[in-house]
Picture (cartoon, rainbow, N blue to C red):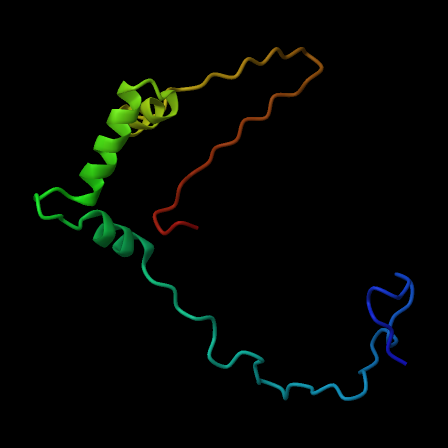
Length: 119
């Protein structure tokens, strides 16, 4: 008897643990359920570079038009647009963390090392 997930108690299972349900197709040893593998995605950097590098009839790239639109918004008082421009142009400001530690609280210092291959 099969019990639908929305009608069953959490303690009830449609079959016993370790048991193979009726009608199940088992994979042979060394056989995969996804022989073609995960589909390849387009290279995002290449795609963005292509889109933002497109030049209009006036010789202006999409990236330049976006920056000009942000500049116009910032000039009109849009603080978020100004923040985006400033952060992209000069980097985000450093943020400090206020920590008040006592003798009872241990201080743990960790080094984080970026590996060139991204691991």
